[in-house]
Image 1 (cartoon, helix red, strand yellow):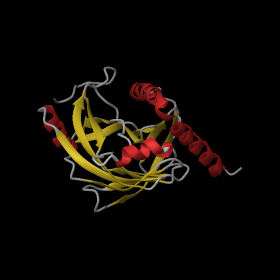
Image 2 (cartoon, one colour; image 1 turned 60 degrees about the vertical axis):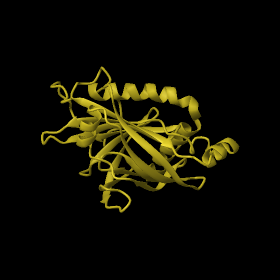
Image 3 (cartoon, helix red, strand yellow; image 1 turned 90 degrees about the vertical axis):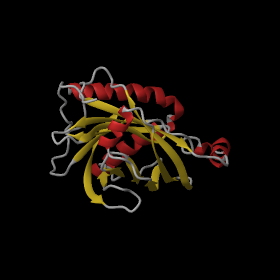
Image 4 (cartoon, one colour; image 1 turned 135 degrees about the horizontal axis):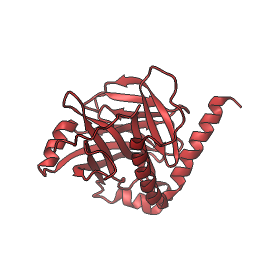
Length: 253
């Protein structure tokens, strides 16, 4: 069997198993996420070797499986206020991440894809850190289409807040959380989820997205780790690779 087909089958099988795990997978995913965070900074998380390439890579963890995606291009989009990076998995799935590391689209997966994602203007990380430090509430709006199922125009209000850093990480890493709340004043999405199990995990509030940020030499805060979900039962972690080594100087608060 050709190697590409083997890799595709392996990845897609894991993706499908993660999807059909349903809501029962949330607790185990959270545990795996914390183990991955701690292991990343200790350097003892096992993963397939990174490809020998000059292209930037990001390490992705989906449930217990890790793999690398390569940057294939950077796009400008009228629906986003910053450049969008397009990453490709070994099996050919595409993940679109904004320059700030947020998922803004996906295509080619077996279970769920985001299409036509649009956001209102989002302050850069430096501004978000300053504003959340002062206790300000920062919100932005996202709309997206979801396949399969033809869910068009899901609208979410996303609230950004500071969260405590996991104690096992160096102090110079700050964490922000983004909680999305689906806007459903007509009850349309709730009825779909109640009447068709296909929509149960798609037309619901996503688990919070969480970002680890580290200050660079130029003073700019950069994402170095994130956990984000395409659906309530399809959550992934992303780490720019090679992982940024953290020191113990402590974060500027």
